[in-house]
Image (cartoon, rainbow, N blue to C red; front, top):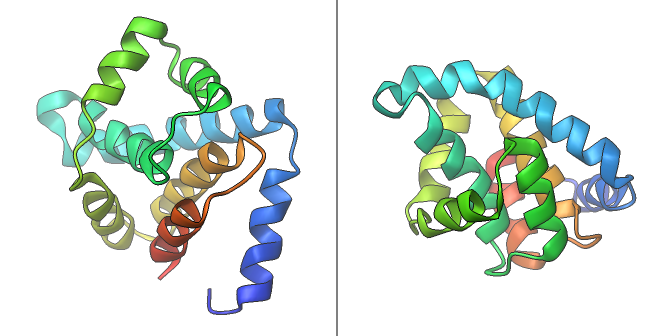
Amino acid sequence: MSDTTGFNELMQKYVNTDYEVLVDLAKEAVKRLTPPCQKVDPEHNGYYMLASIILSAVGADGVLSALEKKMLKEVMNINDEEVSKLIKMYDSKMPDLVDHFADNMGEDIKADTIMLVTTLAAVDEKIAKEETAFIRKLFE
């Protein structure tokens, strides 16, 4: 998406979306992403790949907001301890892995990856420039 104005308007649309709608969109994206994640990550039943997508989204700006944490718990159906374990899995190579995954798994998977990343980035009612840069990279 090369149109900066259109991209920014799209991001603002997600920022203005109600929390419950973002959670529903993220849950649906996770549901659709699980089989391809399992396909590329059979050793971990897709969990590492899915965690890479999620952690790349919430880690792009280096801050896990309270709303992002709340959304993670709801979308992944995990508790505080499991969120902490998930966060500790973060590896700086994950964003590149996610970009490669999105680029090589077909347009539907790419769209679901972008949806999940965007909803997680937008949940705290602002999208940081680092999050915007990561989402833009996924669109390329």
